[in-house]
Image 1 (tube, helix red, strand yellow):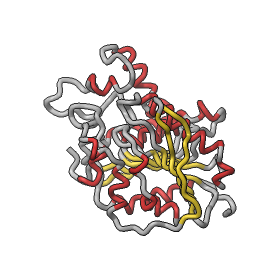
Image 2 (spheres, helix red, strand yellow):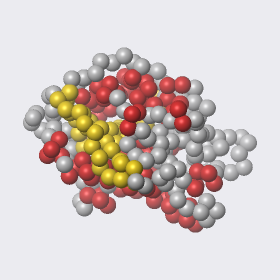
Image 3 (cartoon, helix red, strand yellow):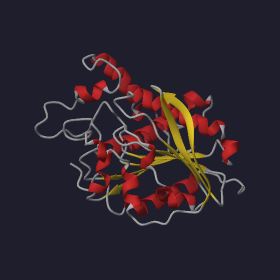
Image 4 (tube, one colour):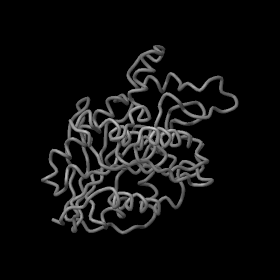
Length: 309
């Protein structure tokens, strides 16, 4: 089990070894929020804040929270508000975006319908719709639709990478939907949990997890097909935007192998990717707030600001 309570909400119901453990609903919060909210950061001054409906799933509204700083650099950061592929708009607080807002980045905190009410393929479809909606209304938000970054952690990291690696299927061009990615301990290959524990017979995800993909969990052909489609690892090419990953090497929830595999695949396919290892850290750590600054600097490097509006 993860050693830090502050990020226990990011557990993923993925394999018996705990790569995807299920927690009570009260703990299914985005871990980033919990850390940053308790860190005592002051809320940045905003020019605008509003909740936007971008779609509907199973008769429930899908929304994202838009935050625009008073000094806007014309760039946007999409936040995947997701832990265990569960999401609640209330999980996001402006304080978590302090490192970005103070630099002039507008933020879009995207929520989705939680599993099992929505399958993981449906969740990916919905967050992709959200990014498309943001791009379509970019003029209203005072941002460049071609200069979006995306952040997330754990399941949110998985969704961030899915949008990054498969975005050009929806954008109609090689640039894709986002320009840069910065994430914590993501799942990159849903087919493969990583190192099995000593008492595991095999390393296959359990039926309970496979069912979340909307398939017959006993149909392994369907699982291999859908699992591959929903694994960012298999969609990297030279056009994939630059990715920064921060991952604890003592993570017992999402194995650091998930990030290592991504880096290896990126190097093989000519994409830019960087892994920062947190020595002795698990699925979250007390100083994660400072690492958000690394994310902001990553976007400073890979996004091109426009004139302030």
